[in-house]
Length: 369
Image (cartoon, rainbow, N blue to C red; front, top):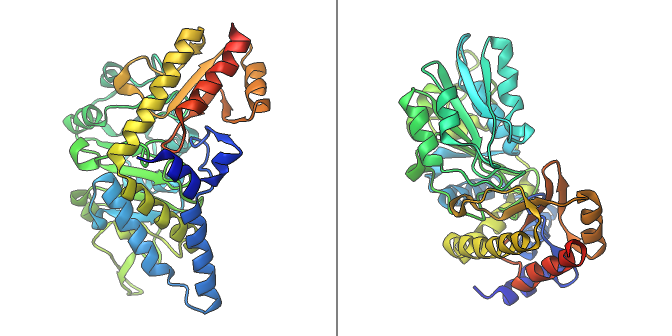
């Protein structure tokens, strides 16, 4: 992977900014910008071509996560995808869903909303920055309808083993629902290999795409028994006022007109990711995050992210004796990152360099030394 060429051709913002915040949002990407400009030119010619490009974007995303095109559909964002699943499962009174206290609100509120139907929401406490299998096992029983977890946790960067979580869910007749926004695009995702039932993914972070575009994977064999609570023209195969017939694939979970501007930009982003290759991207991301982790440990920072190497991702969070002051120092030094409840969150991606990581550590050493 020619990182300098990638930075020069695709991410010119890296010339002036040390961007370490893709866990918050993607930096501007040239192919994405060009695709959006092209769409606007087509619009000027009254030729939007949005539907075809949306279908192409969905198919490309499906390839990225190891699904078939019929198992994927467009969604406005991760939150919408998760809410769609929560409603489509049609919980019954007395059933429960298992979540955890490390989740972003996007993966809590859809389940909390089910309480009005008499559904119990069981909250597992994270340990060491991650959700642990033995804690999940204590919370799951035969009345559990779903386990919902992030592939990578937004605050700590913990990368979960989805396969073992799926096996636990399936042993009890439950489904595994995954928030994938902090993983897909940076790490290898294979929903089939891992037995995932649902995978929701917004585009504006590690997919290096646009806000307003997202995707949802639904395992093929589940689709016939699931119907959206709300449906629109994109959900329906055959219109009938009395009994409209839903599409027989995941597209039944689409509602109406998507954001074509966002989708065509995201299509270009996924094409770039597939061209670079997820294995190469993941290898680079993990190499950089390990360099950062080791440096922070050497400096004596309090690392919030899990210690286990197999749970690493592109996100490393840490705190200091005065975390807010340290964050301010780093921002003033030109680093673009986030301050979150768990501490300072640094997110490295394939366009970042070892020099950027080392410069961040050097700046911290001046304060922590």
